[in-house]
Length: 347
Image 1 (cartoon, helix red, strand yellow):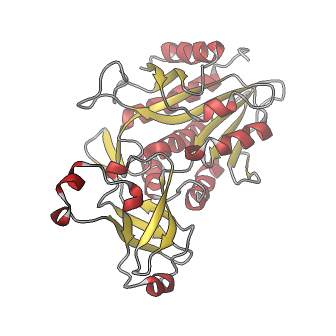
Image 2 (cartoon, one colour):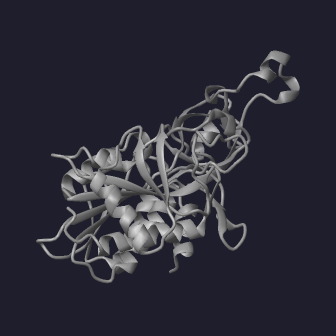
C-alpha cells in the first residue's frame, strides 16, 4: 500500500495510551513484508528488524503507537459515564465531541456532555468547564443498562473521527500524533531494500503517559543511534507567535535541536542536516518547545544513545482532528531513509 493509504488506516485505528492493541496488530502486518523479523517485547512494543552487517551501527527508529484519549472512571446511577484523561488534552476541546467507548465486545458510540448553556448561570458561562464536570452519554437509562452494554471501569474511549483529504496535499484525521510517525517508519523500512546497518523499527507504547515503551524497547535493542519519528506543533495558524514556534506545514520535516527532554546529540544533528542538504530535502529546525519525544528516553538508555527526532509539522495535535501535509510526511520518510543509507562511520 502507498504511504497515504497506510496513514489513513493507521489514523482510523484506535489505540488510546495503554490500549494500543488495534494499532499494534496493524503495525505488525504493515511492517512484516519489509522486515527479516518482527517481534513483540514483554510490554508489547512492536520491533521490526532489518538485518545488516554485525560490524555496522545498529539504528533504532521509534514511532509511538498510542494516541491521547479517555478512560472510563465510573458510571453514575443514571447511566452516565465519568472519565479520566489519558494524555495531555485541553478540557476546552472536549465538549460535544463524538467518541467511541471501546468495550471488550463492541465500540459504543457516545458524546461528551455537560450542563447545557441555556440553564447555566452567568458566572458559569464565563468559566472553562473542566473535564471532571463532564460525562459521556451513551444512551443508557441507568447504571444497570450501561453495565448490560458491557461498559466497565478502565475501558478506553477514543475520539470518533475519520481520515479525509482536504486537497491534493493536506489531509485531516484522528491521531496523527503519532500515526504520521508510524506511517513514516513503515515507509522507511519499505524503501530500505538493503542496508549495511541493522535497522530496528519500533512501534512504542504509552509515549503519551511518559515515554514508557521507548524506555524498555531501547534498553532491549541497545542501539548505537536512535531517531524518534513523531509530529510537532505547526505554528502557521492565527494567534501563534513566531517566538512560540516558526515551524510551518508544507515547509518540510522538522529536526529537533532541543526540547524539554532532549538536546540532540551534535553528531546526530549534523548527520541529519548533511543528509537533507545532499538530497535537497527541505527541512526546518526547532528548539524550545515544552514537549518532547521518544528520543528523550532513548538517549538515556544504558550508557547513553546519541539520539534525535525527525518530526512532521501538524496542526491541532492532542485534539480529535489534526492536519498534516503529505509532502512533509513523504520528505520525513525520505530523509530518514537516506540518513540510514549514508550513515557511513559516524557512530
